[in-house]
Image 1: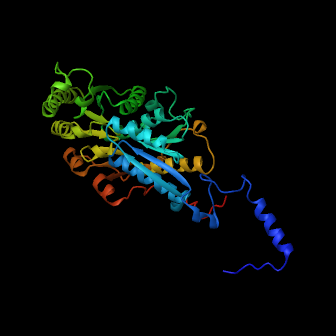
Image 2: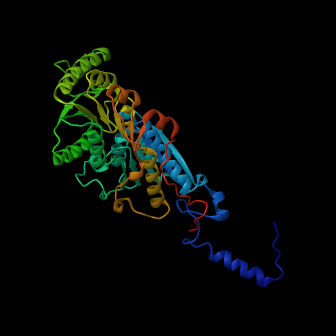
Image 3: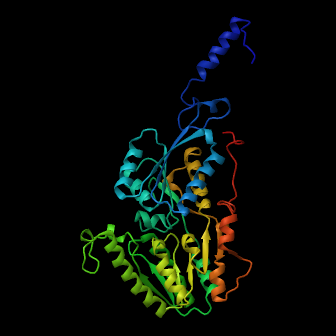
Length: 388
């Protein structure tokens, strides 16, 4: 490193003048402003909080995709993550308050339905990027079209697998379709939103359908009404699960009698009921089509949405807010690219039904075991090359 020697008083005066000029507010680096070159040693620059309320593989891959985008676009050394994981509503709300009261928080990533609801209520100022639900507008209760800006500090990426693609999967899998049994959980508003859209498409296509309500195993914990006359506080966990199992079995028996295929939406809270659902359906020769990869290994076909792509898009939105100055209230709700949708089938179940699928389908075990999350995502490297 060369030493600077001042040969004259004139040079010293000029240098002092330049230093004085550079001290103005408009050019001095501040927390939250991207810095480049030698100033990057002052990192971390951005403080980001993550609140996770769902922990399925779907949400974990969203989380991985989110930070991958930050690495590519901001640079790993230029941000700090403060991460909070919570399962119960009380813990989620407590963590939401902790995030908001931390004065260093510049952006919040809410991953999961309850995380989004809690953060939207906890702050109306700090930007919130939401993901992990099918329809963000539905989750927020705005009543607006899914892609329109919320007009609030919340924006994000809707986990929408195309319902036209879902309908195509049903038609390709089941021929002929007599009636589709759509399995929903009453407390699962996000999955119900998906089903309502699919039902509209099936009506247009002249396909009959019927909804059947089942309960998730932990439904008794949040129930506000009695189940078969037994109020939840009076039940042990074993009693509740037995009661729920009996009720769900009765519903499944009706569904396989009235329909010749079953549909389960993406992110369904009924995945813990797969032994009953898959066992009843497959033994009875009623194939399952699903948009939920966690259920996919127990279904004939599955429309897999690589949730890494959702997280990557969410990270891109965070970059636009933090670095480019975009305003969440003006940003459209985004969605994962169509290239992240993959049609899968389960080989052993396909053999049992005597089904063969074209090359546009992939065997689920082979695909998920060999294709890493994000394999179909086109990544954009900005942090190493872009200069502001």
